[in-house]
Length: 124
Image (cartoon, rainbow, N blue to C red; front, side):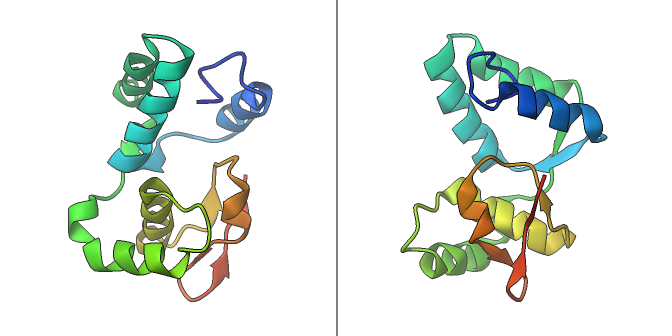
């Protein structure tokens, strides 16, 4: 959302981050759904803009939740004391299956969440 919304507090930081990294970024449907809901609050065409970024190759769907139900349930239970979303759990699982510790998120809970066997995320 920060990349698309000039009014977002993290807009400049998001532009810099996306300029420094090579696409495609790994993503999942849950994150896209959450981004579309948030962007709808910014403006009516927001969800279409989120989808357009995927069409242009900025991100690629890196996992299907249907293939990882037990792992996602375990993560949601593990972090039940935090405000974890299904999208957060999917990102954690995505990091596990692709063995990728770097994450592009402005969600400070990712400083607490762990992937794999208690590995910390590297916030970008």
